[in-house]
Length: 230
Image 1 (tube, rainbow, N blue to C red):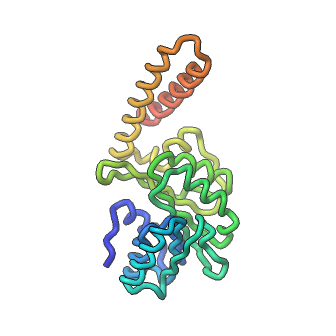
Image 2 (cartoon, one colour):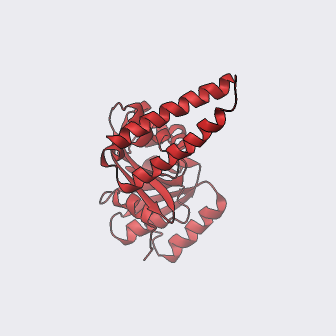
Image 3 (spheres, one colour):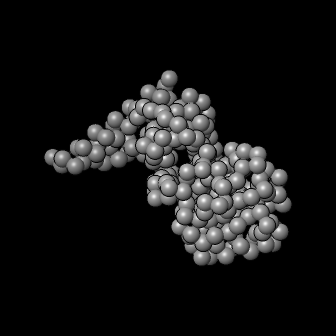
């Protein structure tokens, strides 16, 4: 049976029983293969835009004997989904938040039958939260975890309308309440990095662009510190 990394196990935990999954940027198709083997799903699409990973996914699906359940397609983003698939759940893991938001934006018309989107951005999860607000999706759950020295977030969306504060968009409305040790570690590190940049920008005298950037960073630092201190 396929063994998933911890971050992909978290993504898998949000796929509901008997869902029809489209795993976008599926790489080796580990996630859909694992979910079929565990009996969580009976049908999935594994989408890949790059030929090498697409071929790896095909070989893996054949080797694990799940070809009847997992369809591997070479396509850009959500264009891997076809109407007859009946996909109701989308997962996009292992890329930056802005790229995930771009994929969701460009393929928005392929989300008509989709009830749940599970994203796992490596960086800049804010872009996904902003996309959700602008496209009538709400954040139903979030997780933050550390694996092999790297910090990952998982943001789960369902259809609906919501508004979030600037702090919620940056840090996550659910993560900000839970504030586990990984969350605190991430944002204390970010504050440290921003303070270094603010200090270096302070040396650029009479530079309007530097002044503006410094103001933005100081605002972010204050925003995050307020959440951490609550």
